[in-house]
Every structure is written in structure tokens, then in C-alpha cells.
Length: 153
Length: 104
Image (tube, rainbow over all chains, first blue to last red):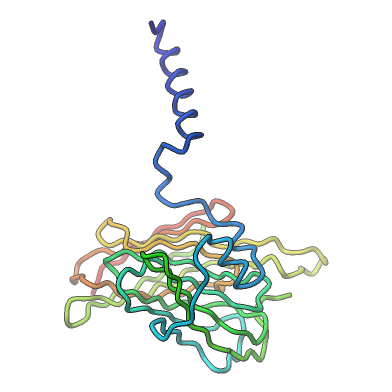
């Protein structure tokens, strides 16, 4: 029998904590920032940290990036994948100190295409990976030569 | 507080809209050393959410490899002039910013 409002609140908090620990409560609207993925230093390590399948190169992922980037601090790139069930577009720069630039989670209201600008430390492959609803991971890559590195190191 | 984002949303024939967003943010990589020889701490946007009329259309997690003053372009499949596009970000210091624009 609950003695007081104070008791009831304390009990609710305790039950909430238990449920959260058990993973039953709904996650926050967005999962926590994926530190392991953003600290990974190679495409393979990013993929491992994202916990997804091994990527397969595919002409169904379109990656646009310049052949030569005059300024490594601002390299415009865009990626798209017209296959049904696209869930995420992932941008990686192989030779950057931090390989993973961004993970875009796209809903049904947007075209499966994103343009952004990335920093490149040195000439490197830029990799765009498409994470599909069925678990497949497809990628496209392009070598971008950088005349002036952009990470500031 | 940072400067406002510039959001340009242009309706396309056929019902969609192209949206271009230019955010104002240092996006410090944490790789640079300052004049005093000390490393300048990483300071960057970590999460971004874009919404159309209040409903999220995409969200993203960003690292330090996104350029300073980040630019993002995306296309809404179905949008009309007058619809509201909003973009919000959070950075690794906990700062946040949210701006909106009307589709032209």
C-alpha cells in the first residue's frame, strides 16, 4: 500500500530505471551519437562500429565528388541510391584521421540523395555507403586528389 | 549563440522542393594546435534533424569531417510553396540551433 505521493514517485522512478536497464523503454528519438564509429580510422572499422554487413561495391550507389579538390577543407560531395528501402547514406573518407564524416538517416519524404561538404586531410578515396532496409550495404567510391589538406593537422 | 542558418527551399515543377541549408559553425576537428601550442578541442555539430511542417524528414549524425559552415542539400518529394522546412542541430558542447524557412 503506497504511503504517500513521495513514495509513489520513488517507486515509479525505480521501476523506470529497471525497465530502462532491461532495454524495454523506447529509445530516445535519436540513438546516441556513435562515438566508436566516428573515432574509427578506416572504412572497415567504421563498418564494424556501425554493426552492419560488409559493403559490396555497386553501381546503384551514385557518388559525385570532384577529381581534384583545390581546398581539402571544403570538398562538395553528393550521394544517392535509387534502390527501394534505402535507410541510411554514410559518407567516409578513407585516409582521414577520422574516417566517418556523416550518417544520414533518410525517411520516405525525401529523395534518397544528399549533398554535403567534407574535409579531406589528403588525397584519398571518398566512400558513400547505402544501408538498405534488407540489411545489405552497397557502396561507391571515388578517388579525390587534394592539393591542400583540410583537417588542419 | 551562433548565427542563423540560411535555408533556401525552392518548390520544383512536379511537386517536390530542393532545400539547401548553410549552417554557421566552426566544426573544429580537434586536430589543430593553436598559437600557444595547445590542441584546439574538437567542437562540431553531432546531430541534425530536418522536418517538413513539423514532421522529421531526415536526421543525421555528423563527425569532424564535415566542413566548417556545413552545407547540406536535399530534395523533398512532395512539398508546396508555403510549407515550412525546419532544421535543427546539436553540437558536442550541447549548443543547439533551430531555424526554419518557408518553401518558395
